[in-house]
Amino acid sequence: MKLSYLKPKLFSVIKTYTKEQAINDVVAGIIVAIIALPLSIALALASGVEPACGVYTAIAAGFFVSFLGGSRVQIAGPTAAFATIVAGVVASQGMDGLFLATIMAGIMLILMGVFRLGSLIKFIPYTITTGFTAGIAVTILIGQIKDFFGLTYQSGVKPIETLEKIEANIGAISTFQWEALLVGAICLAILIIYPKFEKKVPASLIAVIVGAVMVKFIPGLDDGVYTIGELYTIPAGLPKVDFSAMDFSLTKIMAVFPDAFTIAILAAIESLLSCVVADSMVNSKHNSNAELVAQGVGNIASVLFGGIPATGAIARTAANAKNGGRTPVSGMVHSITLLLVLLFLMPYAGLIPMPAIAAILFMVAYNMSEWKKFVSVVKTAPKSDTIVLVITFLLTVIFDLVIAIEVGMILAAMLFMKRMSEETEVTGWKYPENDVDSIDLKFVPKNVRVYEVTGPLFFGVADKILDIKLKDYTRCLVIRMRGVSALDATAMSSLMMLYKKCKDSNVELVLSHVNTQPMEVIKKSGLYDTLGADHFHEHIDDALSFASKF
Image (cartoon, rainbow, N blue to C red; front, side, top):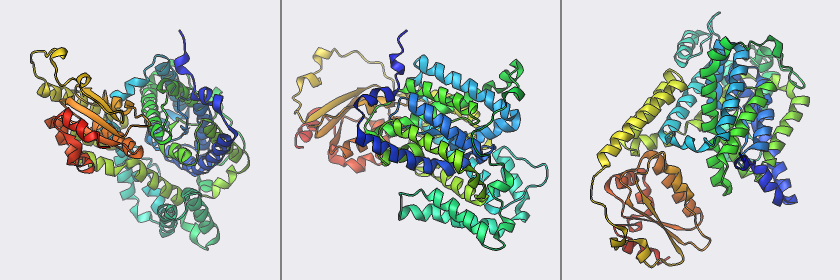
């Protein structure tokens, strides 16, 4: 069996690599490493493991995902999406359970890539990913209230679930420390305000430095503020993993199998979503199967190096692209830079105050929640999509991600079948040669491209909209939708991305023969008003006549 479909992106782009691009990649890699350092420490603590584990993860997973991955600019490492899952596995199965689960998840990811299952991720609707992402954001925010306000739990109280944390926080309200709140509030203010004036130096780095200086040099402030060094051991040098003390029995394997499956599925979803975002930023197309294999290798390497589960980090990937990274070399430089920090500067991380870490995670939770998208879906999407979104969100917060995805997928499938049954009609077949409106019989100007979409546009085929190509000379794109009976929130999101792609390329988007249900969704989304009524036409002749003006 030929494995050319698993060819890493690095091996493709290196053929035309230039000195100028090498410089850009090195600069971007160093900048991303500076961003990743405090985030990796914060996410490790949110995951219930030692702070250095986050850095180990960014180094090992980051390097192998860049080296073997299918994206030009993907940056891998610990992410907020894994925080609650990892914390739960560590609490119930211990670190050896997490190690075993991650190894198993890595093997699953490799097999998913080898058997070309990368394209199946598209069958997870946009509403489900939006719902569980927002739910994870809420759980992270609630989990950091303790450190932000300097609360102290009673002996033996170690909450894991979100509702348990809320109860524990309420029970510990009398232990509130104003010093912790002061440090946390100032760090949070830096994270919010600083990027408005300066974006070259990461706000998170400034926040932890200011927080550490405050606690170190302002008299009395250290009385109510814990630092990382006071609660955790910060090792210098390379990690030392003791495999002999770990339990690899069949009983243990069976116990962690559900966790391994969850880690694998979430890693696949998050990494491929990040790849899609990266593609739009650098005008590229990722190889989903190669990316899954790289994620599998990266996760295995991470725990062998003392780390935790990893996946593509959308924020760090975006930072890489925005700072000039265009090849996997930048991701490898990011890992090497963090390795140097680990070897020579890691002990200084012990000075970082816990409220500063909580402030960083507050911002992580806010950014990943994408609450504007959440509200937009609730307001504009069909009721069936809104139901799936809200239920997935609530189940993620109240129970866990596994239950949320399972129930969400079952609901989405049932509601989709119901929607299709309502839209389906049985009519006599119209022979193509009798179709006077066939596009083959129309004159299409050279600067106009026409795509005809046939069949319901739902989450399983929504990615096909993004496959639409624009030529350099294209000035107008006409989408003919006479055969589209239904449009869901996932497809609407893809249509909005297509509009942004057209806008960036100075191409006008025109829609022809939009049926009733799709038009209702388009109007609710705001795209109708954005394009203007003159960009919608009932007949292809009118659409082509309008398009020829550009």
